[in-house]
Image (cartoon, one colour):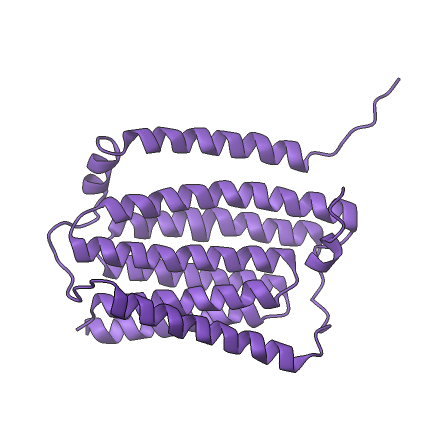
Length: 100
Length: 167
């Protein structure tokens, strides 16, 4: 029988993978994808807790996370394009000058 | 049966998650992330959150990942050169990530008041979600549309090319 703890452990594993990738990768787009990984890990925990408590508030929270993730994707990728136009690379080490 | 499906899904999610981090080519990372997000959608479906499973596939695996892959191809990003020769540092970071996982799982499983069994009181069907979204949470829903609007305008302003003024 699958319990809430199973889903929580899965969520934590996914979040840890996302954090590790966020730290070790240098490509800005891969870093961005690791953020998406972490957001989804939290979503799994939200839905599992919503099922545990038997109400839908957690699922509304997941819906809002998805809305914010869509907005974040648009703005984040625009920033990456602007960065590429200025630095001719999407390497995060090349974006250390704090100017455009 | 349910347990077997859960473990298969969990294994595929963890495997594709590691692939997102480990692949050198960003396109391969993005494709692994698409598989990961579809696995998460299946997890949502197994938790009776049907609306979220659908939205996950349409918005995440569809719209957002298409945008990411579009940007990768637009910028024509080459494979990352293996610049990090410091494998000791890399191993240390991976070990730190694992320690992070152990610490968080201790907090989650021992500090929270978790009742492990799942209830079947209410399912996340489209009708139920819609009823809650348009009554109790109608203000956050409208605020979300404002946020999306601001994000559209902001991303256009950031990404547009500056044209030289013709005098």
